[in-house]
Image (cartoon, rainbow, N blue to C red; front, side, top):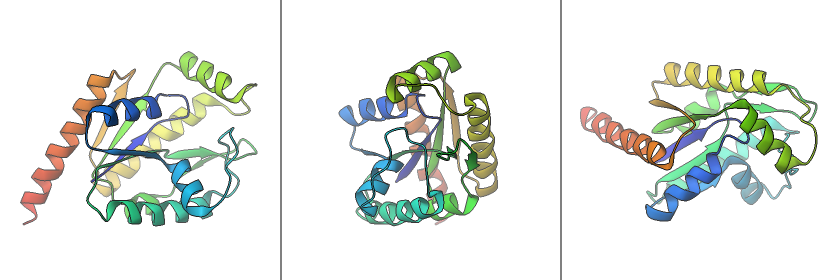
Length: 182
């Protein structure tokens, strides 16, 4: 099972995934972590991306490798990325079609908190429009999930309980869809 955990940098994806994994049978990996591990490339710590297309190909290969053993994978990633030049790029529908997630959880949070977290992590001024990135992430997630009929759970300022409940809903919906297709 693959559940894609989406949201802009600093929204809390990694924290919530790690807390979930502590008490559940699941693996958490970020898209950038898989790209590094499977692509033998170093990603800059600022998380701005130089070669988005190559990275998506590496990511797809890594997901194929990990999900073959039947584990639940919480993949922490994005529906929109910022290039090293500050240009916002929506991830193509084809990437999610090939990933074929069982569901998506889109995390959202207060922009001031997101800005603070990014500034603390990257140590400097943010070189892109966070509001535009948040809007692109949300719009692309909604469009792709609708187009591909992927369950989408949107959570604002998620608690660990909210996050766990969304995962359980996706698991139940996936089982129900599988039964209908038999």
